[in-house]
Image (tube, rainbow, N blue to C red; front, side, top):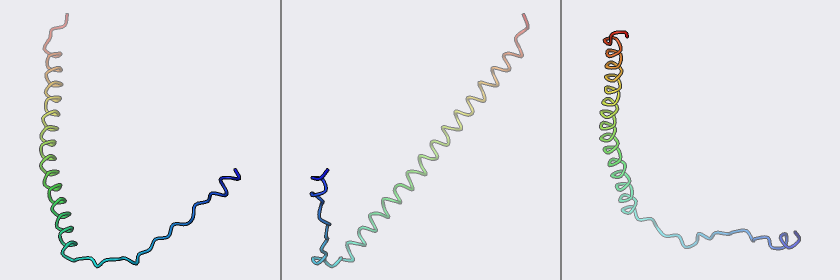
Length: 80
């Protein structure tokens, strides 16, 4: 316990003296890249959303059809 108290880390100091000027063209390219990635994600999400919507409608329709056939079959079979 005594050794742990002796080995206390020194505070971290950060020097920002070597700062460089930011080139506005690099910032514009970064913004355009982010915008294109966002637009690509937006279009793909809409396309896949449509596909998943059609798939969900198909599955629900098959479930409804199966229930309908099952109850119709129950009502048409003569009692034994």
